[in-house]
Image 1 (cartoon, rainbow over the protein chains, first blue to last red):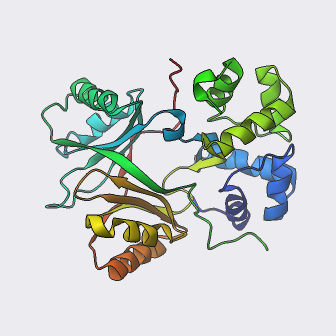
Image 2 (image 1 turned 60 degrees about the horizontal axis):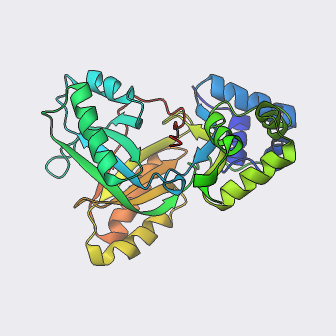
Image 3 (image 1 turned 180 degrees about the vertical axis):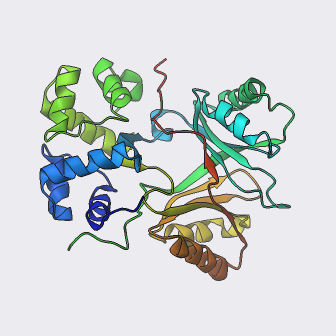
Amino acid sequence: MELTRKERELIAAVQDGLPLDPHPYTAIGRTAGLTETEVIEGLRRLVDRGVIRRFGLVLSHRDLGYCANAMVVWDIPDDAVGEIGEALAALPFVTLCYRRPRRRPDWPYNLFCMIHGRDRKTVEALADEAARDVGAGDCPRAVLFSTRRFKQRGARYAQCAPAGK
Amino acid sequence: MNVAQFGVLEKDLLDDFQRDFPLVPRPYRAIAERLGCDEDTVLELLCQMIKAGLITRIGPVFAPHRAGASTLAAVAVPEDRLESVAALVSGYDEVNHNYEREHRINLWFVVCAPAAERVAEVLRDIAARTGLEVLDLPLEQAFHIDLGFPLQWS
C-alpha cells in the first residue's frame, strides 16, 4: 500500500522520536505542517495498517543490563524453514526472527533471530533450548555476539522526502 | 540512574509503554494517570532514562518494507581496519544500526531508504570505497512481530 505525501511527511517528522513536551504531537505537527489532530489520527492509521509495527518506548537492552546480545543464525532446509521460523519466533526470549538468503560459500545460514540475556552463558543456554524446542538441534547454527555498537537509532525511511520545510 | 534500584513506577513505565503508547493530545499525562503519578514525574523519569541511555527514543518501530526499503548487510573486515570501516559505514544517513559481531564476517549493519535503488547504491558505494565484499541479506520473510521486550526484574 502506497504512502501519501502527508504520511511521508508525518513519518519524517516522527521517526527520530517524540519530544518530552506535554503536547508532543503538536510539536511533531509543527515540523510536518500538520495539526495535532492530524498527527494523532495519521499515526493511528499507520499503526492500524501495520506500517508502524509498534509505537512506544524503544529500549536499549545493553544499557538495561542485558549485556549479552546475540544474533543466532541457522541453516534450515528450505522446506522446513517456514515452520521452524514460526516456532522460533513464538519463544518468549526471541525478539526478531527473519528468513534471509544464504550467500554460499561465505554465508550458509538462512534463518536469523535475536536473543538477549544478562550474560553470554545465559544466551548460549537459550540458543540450545531454542534448538531443542523447535526441533532444529541437528541444523548448523552460529551464535554471533555483538561486541561493539557503532551506531543505533531509528530507521530514517523518509530522509529523501523531508517535511515541508 | 541505577536500574537495580528501580521501584514499581520505573518498572511499569518501562514495561507497559513499549507498544500502545497513548495517541492522545497529552500522552504523558495519560501515562501518569495509568501509573498513579503526575505528568511532571513521568516527563522527568523519561528524561533521566533517555539521558542514561536506557530508552533510545519514544516513537515508531516500522514494519520492514512498509515505510521504505531496507536490508541487512555484512562485511568481513580485517581487524586493523575495523574502526575506520565502521566509521565509514556509520557515516551514511541510511545506516541506522551498525554492530561488530564475533565472526569472520564481523561488521553488520542495516541500510534503510525510501526506495530499493538507494539501498543498493549505498551497498555498492561502501564496497567501492572499502574494496571489501558486502553481503546483501534482504529480508525474505518476517516471523516475528516486534511487540517490545518483556524485562525480567529479578
